[in-house]
Image (tube, rainbow, N blue to C red; front, side, top):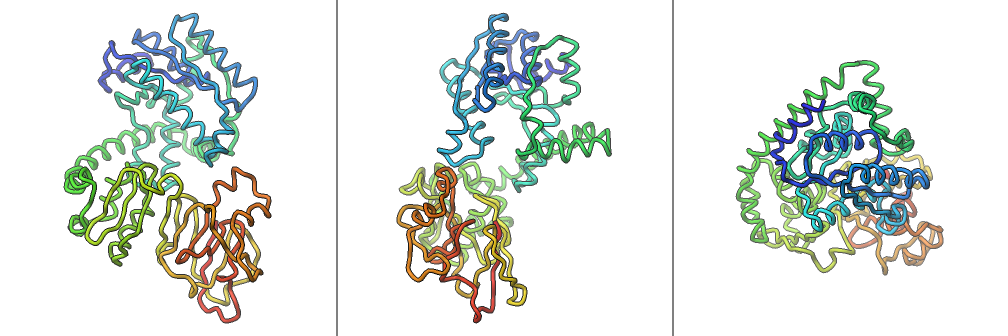
Length: 438
């Protein structure tokens, strides 16, 4: 294992004089990575984030790492964070909050102490799980390539299985701690690990070796595809650097969605948004705006204007939904299904609503609710502030901040997951219906 590990440095062109920041959680994977790194004699330091999610167990993880770092006389950087509060304040899942906190800390350390690369203990099963997660999320061909190991993000354990890592730990007396939360299937990654991969291994004990080969081929295939796409999208990228993309350039492309996603997804724009942009171009809907995390795109008469930031950038991200949309997965997952009147059973369920489709004007818009939004809750005659509706429903602050409204021509159709607007309800005269499921 050690010899294979050393070869990874050469494969990623990492020199002995480069400083590596090694992310260590205290679990067997990262403690084995640490042991291998120490044996390799490369320059490195240790980084640990205490997420405060398991009380004394989290503190014990940090204490073990600090003790080993002191024994090995290695630079040790640690940070204790309130992950649950950060998740609530930013409308994130615990997993996403932990990821942001972790990588923000690593970035700070790299800048302050001049680390050249970050090394993490992702292994073969992690790579396999990531492929399945990406399939589930609909991330496209890039997602099939799984996790990459590069000179900046060094993942030297990707070719090793969990069994091989544990065997190395036993043979070399590597001390580590077990995280019992890894057994829970609450998180998607754990569900794929225990419900899919573990079951798959029982049916086909050789599946990990097969996936090792598959993932290697998929990574190589993606690299070839990336070279081709870079060439074909050269004009798009050239214009993007100038802050715009001409409609004429888009029209010349055989696969408009594919190439636009390639150049715009790094700016934070989703497949749904890009499909909506193309709809706006086709229908000449000048003035439409799309917001990513740090960029805005405005539809002009003959081009898309791409602007850093934006007036409403931090407070309003709008997703446009075309009449032919059947599913969106971002920012939340919604399924759209057309119904005939006789298919409607009149069931009450906050996870889906049935709406009079003839009353809707497409494209619809989906965004987080904001101060000043008003609606007419089902059964009421007058309008009411959305903020008051949420208060009456006693929605928790964290959930309230992550609540969306579905709009038709600026009118609230559905306070998603909570209340339908009375103006769009199904009546005896309704003929065409639309079921929207959360």
